[in-house]
Length: 372
Image (cartoon, rainbow, N blue to C red; front, side, top):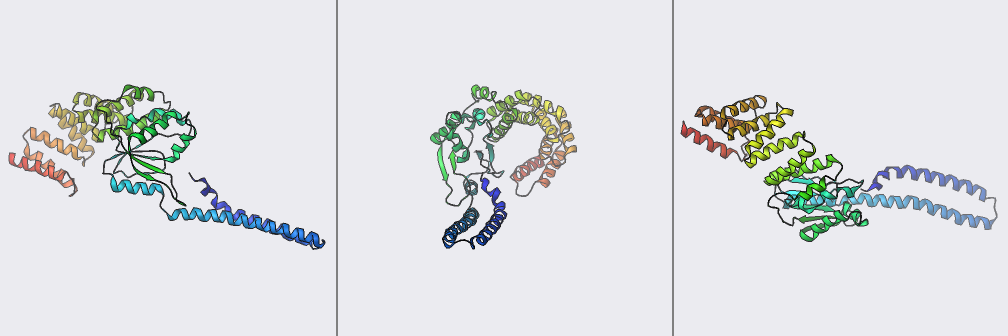
């Protein structure tokens, strides 16, 4: 942070007050000096010159610094440069680990913020283990926090090891240094080392997390990590992370909901149904969850039950596309091809023309038309 900008508005009134004070002092002193001998006058003249130089210094130095600060806005902030590089070179859906520097990325990317707290920062060391981040595509780090850690290498030993491991094992793809009169930190963009884990996270990672006293920080990190893992299709580790989070807070609705979806995507329909039921206890009228339960029941072959859940979900949200598609599948299985086709046409009307799903829906409608 650049705190000096907060006191800039105070400079002008202070300068005015100082000038008035010096001016009044100078005039008063001048009046006294007129009755003095020439030698004294010469001495006072020197003193007055010193006073005037002091006034000029008080005016010029802050003005110069203010000018420098204003000039800093004429060049792009290093964070803006970094964001442009990311937007231009990183594909949509890429996962980015971001250190604390006041930079926000667009929702085109999966962003995992490195936990930070200015008080007792060393207690967050369990989050700074490179093994958590093997599914990350790009690390964006800055010297804001790194420089602070370097000042106390013993205290921040574990966190510094994380930074050093990354810089040693990863590939530095951008090194952005602020030039004269440029805002922003030095930023390093590092490509992931790529040592992907095949199955689960090691148990010692979770054991270390239990040492972190602030549960909200742990849960926030685990939830954001699970989002990355789910979208990267790392379902075993995603399940592991969500289950650990629920061992801390068994009523965490977001994690319960995501666990149900993760089990469903993994093909573990029994576990998915159990997780969905637990979530519905807290949110019995949530249309997406009712539709998910219907989808699970459909996978389990419980077609009539699934139908009722889809109908209920659509009564709560008549724009829920997944419910229309799965209910269409119910009617297809029941050989009611007319209803199945009508539902897919409804989906087709709700989809934007540029949607990637248009071709899929058109194919399904064509298949049903042949079956009539």
